[in-house]
Image 1 (cartoon, rainbow, N blue to C red):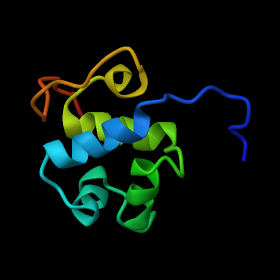
Image 2 (image 1 turned 180 degrees about the horizontal axis):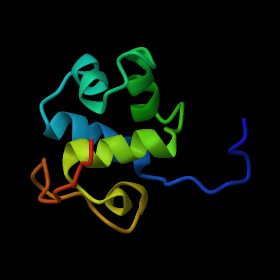
Image 3 (image 1 turned 90 degrees about the horizontal axis):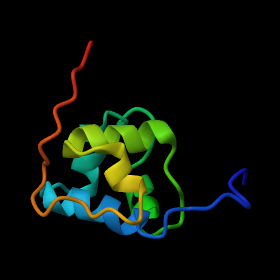
Image 4 (image 1 turned 180 degrees about the vertical axis):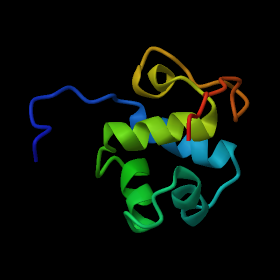
Length: 95
């Protein structure tokens, strides 16, 4: 894959699972909340949470928006997610 040699966040898979569990969502519900029900199978969430697959930047941004946290909170190993999810970040959507 194209990610060889690029550093990966060590805690990313744990944080993605923490977001889903903190929002009290099943993996299927998470796919819908992320807005990717037409793009990928529910098993993709399991792959992210098991560190078998790294999500794209767009998927990570969707996680941040759903969880109401900064993208940096998800990808930076030195930052913890908020204790309560959803967080307090409000994304201005120009849909």
